[in-house]
Length: 534
Image (cartoon, rainbow, N blue to C red; front, side, top):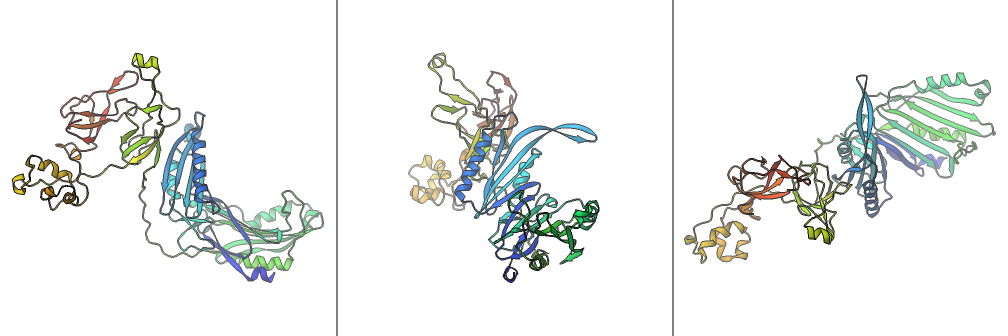
């Protein structure tokens, strides 16, 4: 036993530290933070994670039930990891408000995050429809931990990772540590931490009630070795140590310490520490004889219980809110809010199926992703009749961000007169100058170098068609039947319309939107590109 308590290792459990024998096997399970069940593992490779992520997404996409379909799959980026958050399985539910039953809808959320050498899996059921964003915010607060690391940042340890403060709904966090000793399968150690729990009767109070209810012959089987209040490193709790003589003439031991905690204090959660000996490792098996003596168990218990303490933390700089970045290749489903302005490519196109308005479509951030109208190859008879068949997939269209062409407008300086520069092609000098970047002009056209304004910023010059025409700017919105404020390409804002993006001349009347059933109704048009000609 001297060897077992001689060398100890420190383990971070939630917001606390505890010392265990160096050879003890340790697992942290049942993590719960921010309203989500969380599990972590370091036994998965990057390829395994990618494969599991893809399999989960395909499974959710195959949902056939009316309420079981995948609603959104959003990429997740954090400071050190990436993953995805899924919202699915929308279903009707009921709640009570002001004494009345109110019909609502619930969804399930599931998030996967890959950190360096660590995978995080978080999920919850029966959540409000907007809970996917909340899960993403919580997952962005996770940081991977090295084996044996004791972090200095304030936060909640979950085994292979820590969720850093502050994060949403931190008042309901919990985790459980399970530890075993090699060569002693009957000995188990459990430490549980649960914040936000309503205080209940204390351990000794409940035990006294239980003893009074036991028949006399059962009371004789239990010997109380300790039964008193015990404060451990400022943590006030109750201690109960018992020896029990089982009917099969084996002797077992039960060590318990419990702190009721304070419901509103995450640093004073409801905590229980237990050490049991003589438990059959086989589920449902009869009790076995303790493999450790009573003295050895008491020494081990005092060493472990006496080490329980609140983890010290260092002052941290104010948290910096990470901007939500949308990487090229990000996926958005029809019905989602577009996360980034740019050109989105439909992934459902093949050699036999096209997309109305093109496989790539310009969609502005904040707009709703459209359901693609798919155009299969017409039959011979349809070709003769001049018909084009179309259909919409039963599952939401998957759009992939292919191009982030969305840059601010910059002024183009006027070029000097052709006579002053001595250009041979005087009629074209001013038209060529704005197109050439100042650092590329000497290479692409040495004779045109003097035309480039010397104070023009380095980098590609803006397309003249992106420059403002009068008072109209990119993103301007005009209603149908109104006069077009600027010549350019205008995109219909109605996701069900067949018009897509069309060119209109300044002053012309913007038409009503066209729909599949030849119905025309008022809509709005958004300017996406200025152009003097189509």
